[in-house]
Amino acid sequence: MKPVSADQSALGERPGTIGETSVMDVHWLAAIPSPPSSVLEIGPLKLHAYGLIIALGAIAATWLVGRRLEARKLGTRDDASAVAMWALPAGIIGARVYYVSAFWEQYAGRPLEIVKIWKGGLAIFGGLLVGTIVGLAVAKRRGLPIAESLTVVAPALPLAQAIGRFGNWFNQELFGRATTLPWGLEIDDKHLPDGFASGTLFHPTFLYESLGNLLLFAILLQVDRRARLRPGQLFVVYTAGYATLRFLVEMLRIDPSKVAVGLRLNQWTAVVVFVSSVVLFIVWRPRPAHGRAAPGDGVGSAAASPNSPDAPQDLPARPE
Image (cartoon, rainbow, N blue to C red; front, side, top):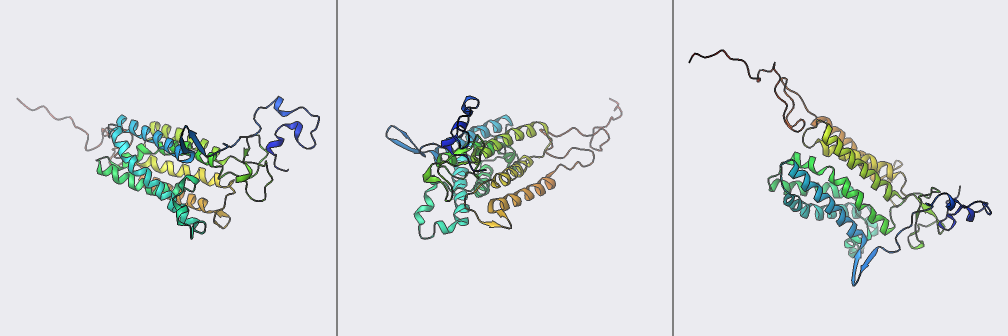
């Protein structure tokens, strides 16, 4: 089956369907259009949509972290902002270093291209690694507990990623294989990969990953409310969940990538992250000892078992 052209989105305009009822009479969605420009003009100001979208994601994540810190009486919104001021730029640098290292042939002899991050080229795995390390260092300096901070930040990360993925939409990049699905993504000729006809529709992998991150965000909030996890465990639930999502999305993507044994570079990274997360989760799991709940299990410590040697015992009355 040939990919459906955006110019042939109505059934009556496709080859072999002349004279038939137009699909637009039944379904309104025939393709997802791409923005005509990656630059937003507001009066004399010109804003790169990619950077603006990342900033919006960071603002949403910082707001959520601040609320969660205060709800747990661990810190304040000022603490969240202070951590974000260091963690965000560090994460961007880490994401760029990962990407440039993986595709150095694109930048060899053109060092100025490395700093043009508004054109895309931020690898989330590198950003998570460096941003988390720097963020935890700042949190520790401000007196925030490290493990609890990891729990607090876990749902905020997929929220930021769900928003940030729309930067790829504005840049018309990182889309998937050609598709005939009615939500196929239109790509203009300037960004069209070699070998595809003008008007070909593609899987909107930015949207798949954004929706997947929103689902992961909701799951993490529910797990945090209902499951009895040790402080910090929720973070590895996030990393395992995102690694799974990214592995699946990468199966559809057609942008250039290093490939080994049939898997793309980011799929191998996702495998490493997933396995490491599972191992950490198992090692980090609560271990009841002497009838008492494990430290940090749930919101507070469970009461000692009546049979525990640490439980209060009835003592004989002492004569006055």
